[in-house]
Length: 231
Image 1 (cartoon, rainbow, N blue to C red):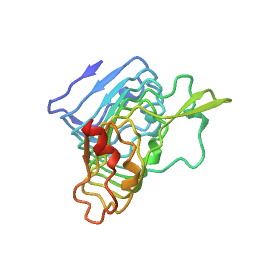
Image 2 (image 1 turned 90 degrees about the vertical axis):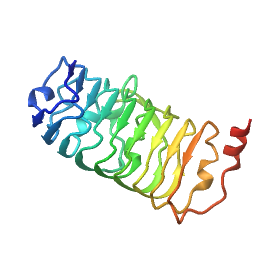
Image 3 (image 1 turned 135 degrees about the vertical axis):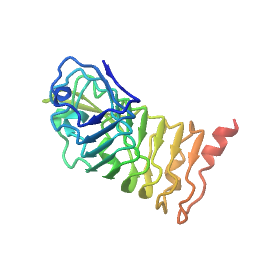
């Protein structure tokens, strides 16, 4: 474990972190680190479980190998100057298919300049918390979580997911198509939402639903949510 949070550390992330095969946790939030995340990050860190680089001055994209780490449980990079485009996967990459699925549990990308589609995250079925607050994501809110289990030659796809907290605040989403019915909290204020209220009818476990400051949002309020809260 390497933990040096809440200091005044400066400079760039050491390349040695990206080539450490024995480190499990790297926690460097609230420093003054600059530069990018080394592109090799994730390629040579097979047992990395926690990577917290929040509230620094990092720039550039997130290396894609990080999202393929099977042991990674927490990835947090809020409050940086990172920029990246998360495109939906056009064709399924069988490197995503593993015996146990991906273990990523908490993903915090808030307060950067990320853009693209939520569909990029659809295979992280173990995820319980996802925050993309204050970025530039756009299009539809469409997150049908799927577990891809198996190996490179045979894969089984299981629908569902475990996400309970979804923060999509302050982006550019225009509609709601599908959200996990496991949600306890859905935050999507200050977007460009116009439609999709009917897609929320399955949120019977949701106790926080924040859709404020979407002046063009239309549709009937899902009565199922009201009924579930009244019981």
